[in-house]
Amino acid sequence: MILPGNTIGVLGGGQLGRMLAQAAKRLGYRMHVYEPAAKCPAGAVADKEVNAPYEDLAALTAFAKECAVVTYEFENVPAAPLQVIEKVTQLLPHWRVLETAQNRSREKRWLREHGIPHAHFAEVAAGGDLAAAIRGVGLPCVVKTADFGYDGKGQLKVMAEAEVAAAVAKFRSQPVVVEQFIPFACEVSAVVARSAGGEVRVFPVAENIHTNHILDFSIVPARVAPAVTAQAEDLARRIAAEIGLVGVMGVEFFVTKSGGVLVNELAPRTHNSGHYTLDACATSQFEQQVRAICGLPLGDTALLSPVVMVNILGDAWAKGEPRWDVLQSDPAVHLHLYGKSEARPGRKMGHFTVQAADAETALAKARELKAKL
Ligand code: AMP
Image 1: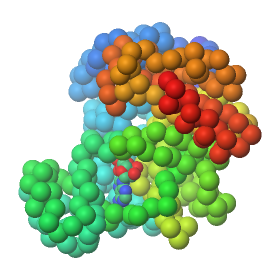
Image 2: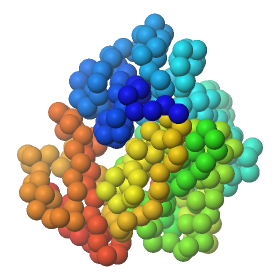
Image 3: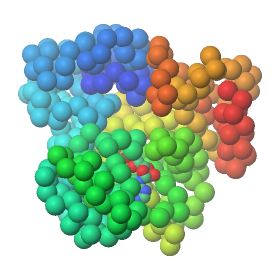
Image 4: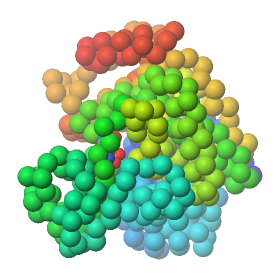
């Protein structure tokens, strides 16, 4: 067990690192952040901020020497350099988990090899025959770059034969995955935690509404049949055990119109759709991350109240500072801001949660408050 007083390191200094640092410090740990860009959101909360590139092996080694355990909050950290950390201290989740999850080809192949339901797909190497792969998978489909994709970045929906040529031109030089388009009923996700001893706990399944490919609302409990929730939880548990997770992982799913569940994406870190746990669960996903990587018993994941989480994007600053008083004057609403100085459109600046007697009431109120912001 790594006990309070020890130092936890995190690679990546965004909001997930910031909320991890807040949880870790509350529990009595010291927190160090490694992030290429200076003045990051996590650095403002941490005991130490190191600014160096992820490929700087000397800086990574020096950083690791000061930490009892190192984790990451950002999936696009190049996985290979992280092996130097494992020579000095523990890196959790293990770098191979990150390596699998950060590349769509490897991730999908892993799902297929482990018999986990997923959308049918084909892999195409850089310069490969994308048109043939699209015809093989069938239309409509979604073409996604294998590397560095998130929030819908680097993907293109191909609905009709006439759009194939444009997709080929756009992705000619990069490895991609061609995926069957799923006309889903809704999207849900689960944050799962696993300790080194094999204890697994899943937070309540969230229903997610995306706008322009970015998470807009998370609704908990998800408004789906109990059988759907059960499938998602079971799959999250299975994935955590079979991939050898030590830490937390967000698992995103498509719910099909027939009530089936397909895994869309794995993120071996805390997840945006798990932010509701900060206000509405007995333990937050960030405390759970600390517990899992420090070898403490996992915390209780019980939901204390129906809740809706709303992301606040930079767009909310279009007409000046948002109306925080609208949120702050309601005791059932909790605001979280990430301390980012520049509000760019699409940038995640903060979130708020709304608790109510049921999810529908919370959602109606959340939509109203968002509009007033
Ligand atoms: P991703 O970056 O893969 O998580 O995709 C972002 C969003 O695009 C998802 O949350 C879905 O809303 C949508 N999307 C991605 N892949 C598919 C698919 N195969 N079928 C339908 N919608 C998709």
